Length: 169
Image (cartoon, rainbow, N blue to C red):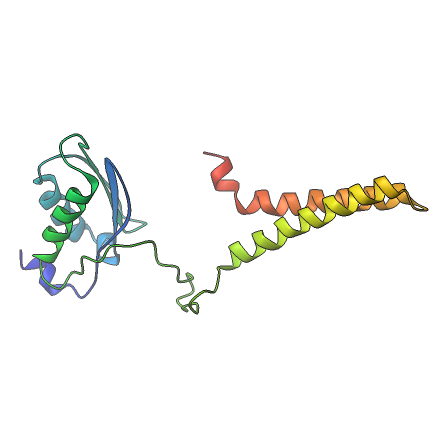
């Protein structure tokens, strides 16, 4: 059990739903740490499956949700991690820090979210303009209707590009 005291790192529960939770930490990229934690977790009552992901530095824990609640399993894992010493048992949402290592200011959205917001606003504006041009029919209205329609399609493409991983599940 002294193995975790040597490490100067932290493990966090980053996602949790009934029956499944994900533990993430830089230490889980190392085989020894991952194996030792997996052994300790598999000894907990109710744990049915463990799925390590060394590239992501995470470990997914599947447990019998009829045997214990989400809060109970989180508490068991927090206790297990905390008893190993300096490894933090912090729980919460994923870190919002960009991958470059620089931290964003509080309240600042990621670039992906900002681009997506602009694309959604662009879709609304171009759709409204397209409909207004079609209704009012000013001189050269077909040209403007087509132009605003293509603007909508371009903004839609950006929006779909941002959410491509969710679309391909």
